[in-house]
Image (cartoon, rainbow, N blue to C red; front, side, top):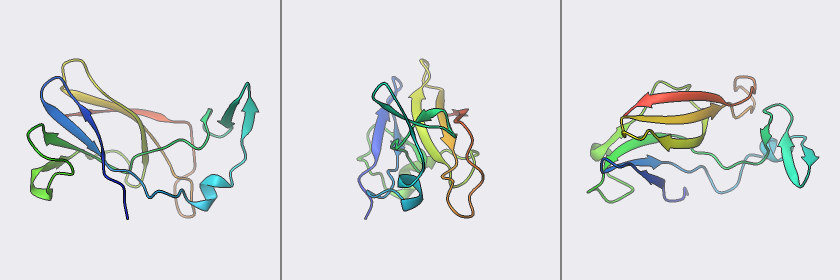
Length: 123
């Protein structure tokens, strides 16, 4: 079972509903090599922290909705690579855009892993 979604509220009374992954990460994620530097664990392929949490998809929900919102009240954001893991999500100051990074899970059949890519979506 999945955890309840995470939410981020904009200044324009909108909610960004972020789905959470399963509670246990895939074994290929846990088995990856990592570098240790000053108390941090670094993924040498991504040049980022290893073992980061992530989201699977995003949707805009009106602030009056109870989250998780019913499917007819959700406006999914799309256009980023399907199956990507989503990190570092943030609203723009005017609440018209959402900035986030995407990365490949790097599992069997996934695209190769590369450092995080910055994406911006219109809300």
